[in-house]
Amino acid sequence: MMLGISTNSFHYKYYQLLRRIWNFEPRRDRTSLCIYTQFLFWFTIWTVICSPAIFGGWLLLKTGRFIYKVCSWTSIGRKIIDILDDLGMGQKIDYLSNKMGRCPAATLSVVWMEFLFAASLVLFILSCIIGGLLYIKLICTFILGFFMAISLLVFYICFGIGWVFAHIGMSIVIALKWVGLFLIGYGVAILGGLLIIAVMGLIGMLLIKLITASEKMTNFFGFKLNGYQRARALNTKRRDELEKIREEEYLKEKKEREELKRKKAAGEIPYTLSERISMAIGRKLLAFFKWCGEFLIARTKNVKGGSVKMVSGLGVFWLTLTAVKEGVCPLVEFVKEDDEIEEATE
Image (cartoon, rainbow, N blue to C red):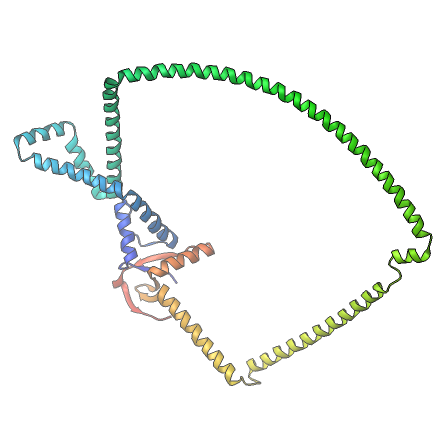
């Protein structure tokens, strides 16, 4: 069944407001639920971010129009208006005012950005001119200091190169010294290890000879004088037999439970009173929760052309999350309230 969004809902009116101020098509009959939700989310954030620029642009246009209005009252003001018209100010205000009617948010934001850029450029030029005249001595001092810094930089670069080469030579000498010491120590360690292995091998041969000289000692060290292996074998056999018995009892009980369930379902054995009460309560609770979900998320209504699930504000959020989880986004129709015929209960 197609999902529907009422044109009288608050989120739909807010959706159309965002589309109007950002110069999108104001009326659409159908769209994707994910596109609808993401448009509301991202353009709300973008509008909040741009709100200072939008207000600033509106204030600039309002100020310009107010200046024209005030200046038209006096002869001096009318001369000022003539100067502004020669500069193209009036034509620019008319153009921006008409454009603001079609796309207010973007137009006002651009106006504010252009004003900030122009104001910054003018202030930079004026500061350079005024600063150059007032601080010409300081500027010459900075230029001389710059060349002195370049000279000092060249000195330090040459000094650094020499320092690096000197320390590279020292590092090579120290590395050769430590490599030699390492090779000598490594050789001594290898010879000592070989000597220890030889001594331990000789001692091991003597112990083996002593152990194998007596049959009782051989059986003792070979774990042949105790009943460990026989005890392990008997215990393993006993555990296997117990496990087999438990498995047979479990299968027997499971078969009896399934047979009892089948007979109750077929009507051969009646349900107990507690079972009937539990089943009835479960069905009622399931139906109640299903009704609550449908009431809060989407209610089925009959409109011209068929039945539509009218999505609430909570339903827009919930169905979008469900669509993201399942990877499939449904389509929604924008339905007018006067197109509804009667409300139906699913």
